[in-house]
Image 1 (cartoon, helix red, strand yellow):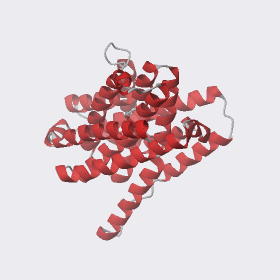
Image 2 (image 1 turned 120 degrees about the horizontal axis):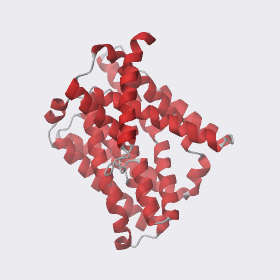
Image 3 (image 1 turned 90 degrees about the horizontal axis):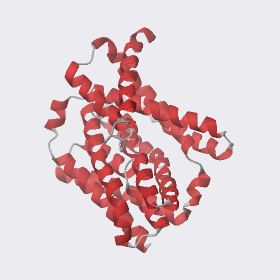
Length: 324
């Protein structure tokens, strides 16, 4: 088995290395390696083609490495950190997430966007960008082109939020705590949240980071809910049921372990790096299987859906931060 997997893993690792290297270039420092890996993989596959002997390894990275990386994300959060933003802060994050997901999926139906693509855009906007899209796709099983489209749209509007939100803080009269809560509850990627938060001060950055990691923790119930919906739907259409997302249960277990056991800082750093590298490899694999011609066929409606979701989550969370 490993003989068949190795060539694809090597190719994915090469794309991942390119993504990490490209991040050091001027103008690309704003983007996470995960995002750059998707586009690097897509450029490679559409310009040179994906070798047949590499497909098994690419599939391995896209499925197993991604699942394991999401499990390791649990080590980024403790229950004590969640308590740090208070019950009200957790409530704002949770209500914003649920409302944004439902808004996006419902509007997707009205726009005529494919249900699976709408779910990916909803997950990326409401939870945590590219990693949420990857996790959601494990249970929705959308096409690779849909994953790439969703990542591209989320990257665009998340970057706009990262650059624009700090400029809006004085206009809306937000102090550091309020701004951090708004940024953490509404901006898409973890790196984008950190970039926006710390532009307005250390307290804003810390609050934004904790609020965002709280959203990441909510990935677990969201994916479980989608998995149950997929099982119910498949039970009607076929006797074969999609597997429940075991990796989400393991993710919750890692959060609990991280909350109860004092893990050395060096081990934490190593785990965080491993999780990021594996997530990047998984998304590079998705990019390698994306067809640009299929992306064009999706048209502008999914992009308008992502834009509408971006406006909704920004306005909804700001209203809660200001008036609740």
